[in-house]
Length: 195
Image (cartoon, rainbow, N blue to C red; front, side, top):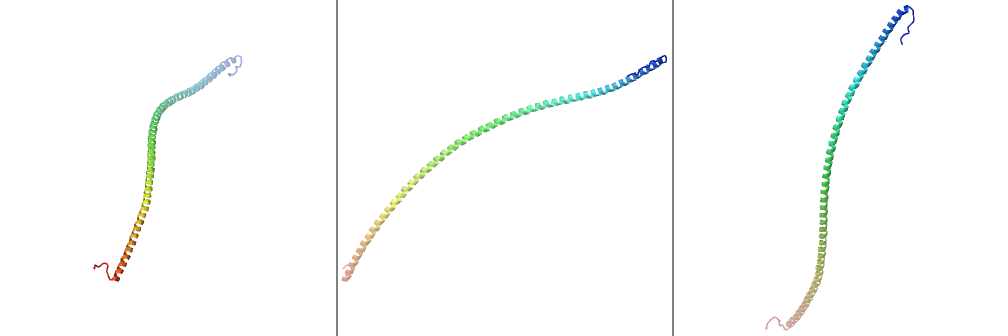
């Protein structure tokens, strides 16, 4: 606040002028100081605004770079997704083809297995039939052997009995011949000599 002016007479006017001049000068100095302070404050604000502007520009540039990087990543991601989808589709097609091929091989193998099992059953049935026939044939041969054995035993018995009978007859003839010889000896006649 400006100082209060004293009212005075005569000398007071001169003093008034000096005071007014001093007051004006003080106001001027004060104003100049304020102007300088405001200039300094304005310079600081301009510097802050300039720094803020530079920071804003830098941030905009970084934001643009980040946006560009993000768009590039999106494009890369889209390309990767596209490649992965293509690879997945290709892999799925390959797997389906493999599954189909394996199914076909399985069906062929099952058909061969059924055919082999059928042949095995037929072979086993044939083996059993042949075994039965052979067993029957063996049984017939064993029966024939038993019959032939009995027949041979009968023939041998008859032959032996006939031989025994012939031996007995020969014995009888020999005894008879011996008796004849003895009787001839007693007569001094040899049955083998001619008279």
